[in-house]
Image (cartoon, rainbow, N blue to C red; front, side, top):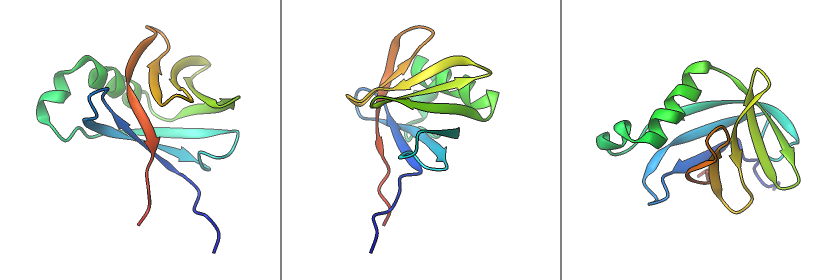
Length: 109
């Protein structure tokens, strides 16, 4: 049986509170593609956090493009870099250089 490819990345705050997902096409193991965001914090009060508000604005823009460089993945919209999924697990908002949280591959059942 072959290993499943990763199509979804879980997004959490730095305090490990769930805030959403990024869905990658064709999959996270390839070198580039498109992605969309699903912002669904488990705690209602997180909707007012700076991290979630930034992700909601990114989500509202629509489909983004992504490219893998070394072990990092950079997400852009209309050629403007928005997010970096750093190899150390940090999710970085590139325009502000702010760490929005952490990321890791979603596991299928």
